[in-house]
Image (cartoon, rainbow, N blue to C red; front, side, top):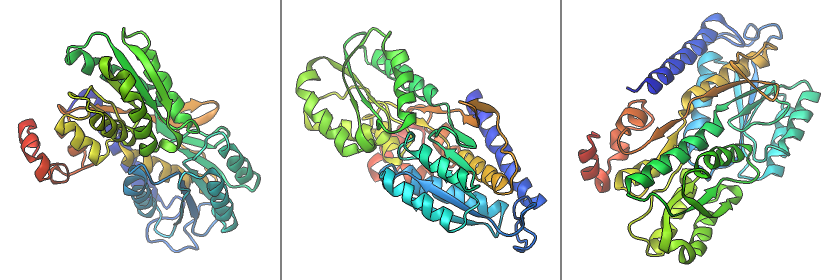
Length: 363
């Protein structure tokens, strides 16, 4: 295990112990306690709203939601999670937040569709005494923020792309950049971090696109429109996440680009891990969701009980916890997403990828 992963595993263990400690101490609803003695100070079981932004990115329904719900249940058996997914509709998320407040939730855990417009959700909630955790995506004025160092994510993507291009024997040439949604504050951080590396790398950013709604289909359509122009000198593709990476790769293959240039990604989606094994995608960024979800659950329970959240950083005056992202390439799949139990080897190494997995020592 690398030093970075060792530190990450330690952070995960510490968060797990903290959540277990909440259950043991009866903070905000101890496991198995009755609703009459489950609250700290205010009494009664707590309602926690989890508002996620969309379902096009696989992580939200597959990992964030179940891991958050499990962490809340482990720490507070009689707490209730009120869940909504906005399906990339900011107005719908506003309505979902208002409905949750009407239902009497004690805290909102908000992964915003649009970070700027979501400030209204925060203001409305706080005016009614409901604190807000900004989950994964920053929203100004929140009571707490938990995410990853998002500018660092972009820096890691940019550095990884440069490394992959040089490994392919390309020391100059054109890059295209497929960024995230213009309404997502995190996407701006990814973009800024990537540019900080790529702009001085000796390669040329030939074309760039901010992908509405993080849509893989829109990323693919845009890339299809660029292939004819950039095909002759294209040496790399910066894709901000795995969904847009998949769209870009489909467009490149459809446009007859062979061999494929290195393509980045983010979120360690199963399809992306398999593309990396197959050699179609150079890298992804693994942001281990379990400690993020556990941290959000722990601090949601604290805020529901009118306690201060536990933080180690600050972003624009908001107490924050920023976790470390990790680059995943074919060389460390076994030591990252599989070693952490994010995926089983059998999930990754289906029949189509079995031979490549054997070559990489993944079993």
